Image (cartoon, rainbow, N blue to C red):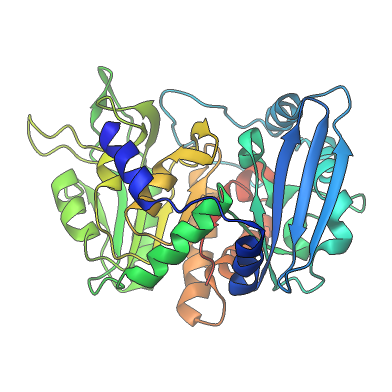
Amino acid sequence: MELFATKLRDRTPEIPNLAEIRAIAQQHRATLVQYAQGGDRQLYIWVIKPDGTIRFHKTDLGNQSLETRLQATRDALNVRGRASIAIVKTQVSPTPPPTGENNLRSLHKLLIDPIAADLPTNPEEQVIFLPQGPLFFVPFAALEDAEGKALIDRHTLSVAPAIQALALTDRAQQNTKQGAGPALIVGNPTMPTFTNLVLPPLPGAEKEAKAIAPLLATQALVGGGATKAVVLRQMLEARVIHLATHGLLDTVRGEVPGAIALAPSNAQDDGLLSAGEIAELQLKADLVVLSACSTGKGDLTGDGVVGLSRSLFLAGVPTVVVSLWDVSDDSTALLMTAFYRHLAQKKLNKAQALRQAMLTTRLKYPDPKLWAAFNLLGEFD
């Protein structure tokens, strides 16, 4: 934890001033949306447009706290909250159960309606949300307006844990040479033991990895071949890293919360790649996808979420795709293959590709919990 904190201080830019925030919006050619709570009853929203224009809005939270509203939405969607071990569910029927529609509309009314007129009208233009505290876990893509339109229908979205994270990923993109090695695709490693429990296998994740690998001109590492030692070696040169395995939310070896489950290779190698270990790497990947369960979670701090995603930023990765809740094998495999197909065509940026993949997945799996779990963090180009 101390090593991580030291690296965090060394690598994290100072909090930008107003002129710098305007410059970030212009540089990214994006509309920034910054949220902050003003006590228990007020929500402050700043919209920074690509031309530097800033709009301020204030809205009343009423009698329900943000935490209560968000938990009600997650309960209605029937998605899991934070747990010691996150386990992917399998064999989900395309037939949608009740979806928490009213909750999604309630959040849209609170978070989006006040700023709707300030958002771009072109759905291909970028909107970057800068949430605070529990708002980081809002499934922005699935929020519905009064007409039943999801936000992903109208906008291309990404999320940053804090304004500093955008500056951090800018610097990562400028300073990191893209990996010359093949893409690294990991699916369903031989599972390690955690807290005296052998993690259950994920056959759907293996299927996902094998389906994605040809799209990236590589072979997937699965089973006993996906050891921590092998994965670490390939991570250092890979241009794209896709990890379809368990994501642990607990603290591992006294470091920051979060770890990726890989195959152990010997008695000294437990197979757990911790967030602290990731932060100490110098990665060349342009994109890392954590297609695991609840990988976007971590400890909430004043400047964002400390966990796997932040560790990857510190390791030099400009773009990370993470999940906000437990994801299903079937819908995730469809979403991820669509995502990589769009990227391979090189007609869309990463955020646009994820948007199109969500829209495609929603046609077969209308329930938001099956298509809206993933957030793109950092650079979208």
